[in-house]
Length: 142
Image (cartoon, rainbow, N blue to C red; front, side):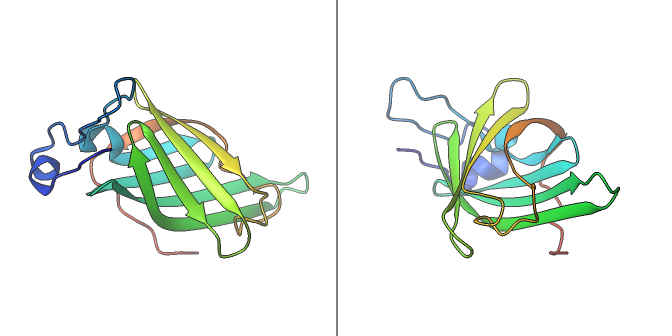
């Protein structure tokens, strides 16, 4: 179980208390920011109470030099260093985000591009690098 406190979020100190022995601790400072993998981006903000605000913008470049895009926004639940975002509007879609050392975010997607409401061949799966720390600027949907 994780407890994120408002005071800890404001102070930017350790905000996660983990009961499980092997779970890793993720602070708001470690989670907050913008992560990029090629042209795909995640924006993440710790909200407290085991919740993260998550926004995804994805791009797939076609062979004909056009692009397919994908967008998702929602509230993920975090336990330890693993956050899960469930998107059920279009089909069964689950996005799992694992916070790794040195600003890395490993993402896996369960569900097809269509199940997640993305354009053809747009997926979240990959290892993202943090390109900006702090509170991200969330973009309006395209």
